[in-house]
Length: 480
Ligand code: FHN
Image 1 (spheres, rainbow, N blue to C red):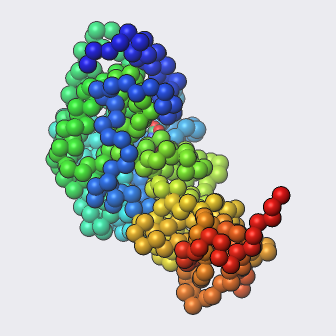
Image 2 (cartoon, rainbow, N blue to C red):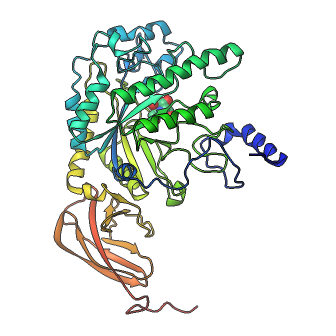
Image 3 (cartoon, protein in one colour):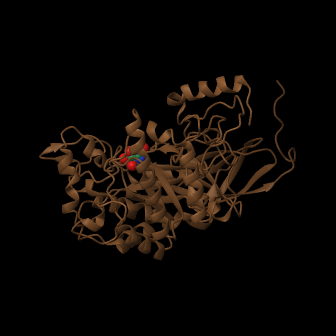
């Protein structure tokens, strides 16, 4: 399409400001025609995406040869994220690149991992097929740097896909665009020679992705990472085409906003401020505060148990989250229409570490009783209160108060929209419990609950409402 010179100036401006704008939603200032921007406005409404939206809880697995050093090399402690140890100046690259010759995780039990995830309540799993180091947990025919060349030899991704499929947990494949092992990989393209080499890398990337979907056709989606390099950002047309090809291979395939940039180099959100991909993938280790923060998009939060450790680090330092904290993050995510994905980093022998097993069991015990406030639930447009979060079942409209901070008064404040009257409340765990509701004034109530024993876990009150006539039986507001 022929564009006015003004548009060219604008386009150049956007290209120039890309680095700073990446990952923040640009203001909706202009609407220009983009060839490789968002291809859809608003949420996807198909069955697959509805299933995704209703998961609530997922599991992330970061596993690879970085689990062998586990955050240490020759007695030195690596303070970064364990899966990044290869990039540490103290880590000899050659030693790292030969670690796969020792990768023989004899304790690995895919069925055990899947069973544990099921008991925790996970509805989907995201598995690292290869992280930034390029080591493939499947026997890719496009490189020798794979599990097939390790002493273990067997296809790990295949075993995990089968095991999680058997438990009814949907599988999503994590794939890093960054690949430190491929000779053609570059983070930026400075010379003609770089560009030439990078073409090989692009073909390799495409071949591996096609290979993964061919080998594991039950895959529900791809979780891309390591897509922030300048070299990849410049590949808008290639990435867009590749996305199309992959989506054709598995109808309904779900791909988040990290995959590709638009032709002006904007990531996640295109030049017009529209999200590229099926859900927003920018909520890493953070959760939105309000519904406005999500701009009407689907989103997931991926979370570590310690501070920013994804792969196995034998020595977690700093704060390690408790199950109560993680449950709160899960419920907060659901209350704001997102999914919460908790990361696990198994060790080099294939064990899930005891701390993770304990947390999975505690979350699972809570989910066992309270899962109905998570699965199929989302945002309720009632004003948030300090005691916790509301969620609502998208299909039935059943409403929940998930209480994390019990007021000493025993009075939980509830503010409702016009024409809504709460008329019954009871504990999810004890449907026969009848909790008193007191009207304070128009649209505002106290739900009175006095626990018999000290509250140690978040608990749920179901609240039923009827549509009411605005003025009927309410106190009149003072005229001031
Ligand atoms: O660099 C990676 C990191 O190691 C980890 O895989 C996380 C998971 O979301 N993603 C990248 C950082 O955004």
